[in-house]
Image 1 (cartoon, rainbow, N blue to C red):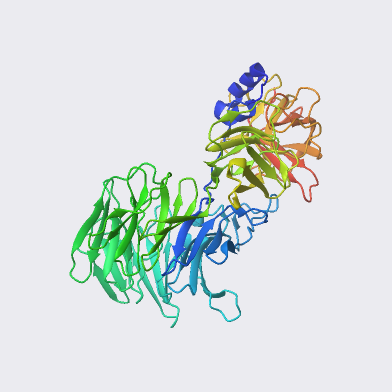
Image 2: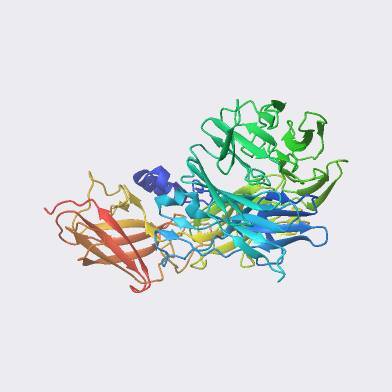
Length: 614
């Protein structure tokens, strides 16, 4: 981190509160992570393993593909290519409504494909901000069903049910689950639709649905799901409870609805099979969940369409094993140097596809164990600062960025440890690079809307993919306590305005905010603002005092003098607005400031603790 005025920083940080202000003193990097799907995941293949679909947020090099979830396709004739992507319709600030519901299900994941490859499904998620109903998957998620054998040569949309969907092996049935809440995931509404007749059957369960989102609907429309009492099968009005299956499970059903393969959701771990012909159940494999396994399931199992062959992840080194549903033929198939994160078995059980911990995509001959690399090891991002502040430090977390850690000193270099980060093709300063994280400085000249950062790692130049992130500049806002009270320092910076130390008439106060706009004489990105020259805010700013108002923003106010607006000297990315309070005031009140053109600009404001007139 850059050097700062430690005494001044310590005084103000102590006054304003360590947790809120520490990042502006250059003492720590605060990063609110959001989940990203840049690793290759959601593997889906057909009967003979001749085609593979998967999802990733990474883009292929030399393209302008979006850096959020997309569906990719592999086949031996064409290799890996993009199948589907959709634009993110999140509206930029200040035009975005605080309660925003997108119209595009843009973040794509979890593909599924029929036995003959003629029908494909995948799940899209859309933006939903500020609504309590955003926890409801029927509102946020939608499944798209495509017919791929359309005479026009382009995918034809067959159905777009809400929620999380999957296909039967023959591609005739689609099942979609829509938890009314995602935390926890119950109760669950389940709809099975016959794509040939259009007939739909609905079920409801009061327990969380535990499935791989694949192989839980058979060729006749029978589904397997969990209830409060354990596993159950359903087909129309016919419901069949599975005896002795109390608890939660990840379950799959074979294409003829005669066999179940399931994992008990417990610390010990049981991979089991149930014959629906005679009602017998047996444990195929038991063992504790390895610490390296990122999947919620203990074994991450996948099975052939008829259920005779089961692939699963096992061992301290997390490799692919196969076993017959009768318990015979247990053997290890892969011996990779990296743990396997996900495996999917072709419908005939002869081919498996897997992703490894270093984000390689592999195709495996199950009979011989021979494997071929479809995509080499590729770094990936798993978390990023949700919004970033211009001129400040931010970071990403993930995997594969470096073999060892390296820390830079300010002014920060554009290349570090074999890594470069690019915004619109231009490199940006790097503060640190570690195997699982990168710290970087945010340029001052960011666009107002979203922007993309590409992560180039020289050690992985062989991969056709480049990881990256979509980010947004931080929303301009004042720092507040108790949601509405402005963070403000008294004139001598010795303390903050509070109930015990209120603002006085005629006093100069220092308000603090983030991302108010472009500044003149900006410091280098990632470095604190200097004492000289001062970094002044370029857009015009006007402030007003208001009191005796029962609502915010107020309907009536009094203009007040603005003495300074810009970056707080010696601080990192912190804005300061110095105002002179009115000569007199009475009752509760506060300050609001308008930045830029009132018709198209934005404002900040909040309440202040006020001292009564003498």
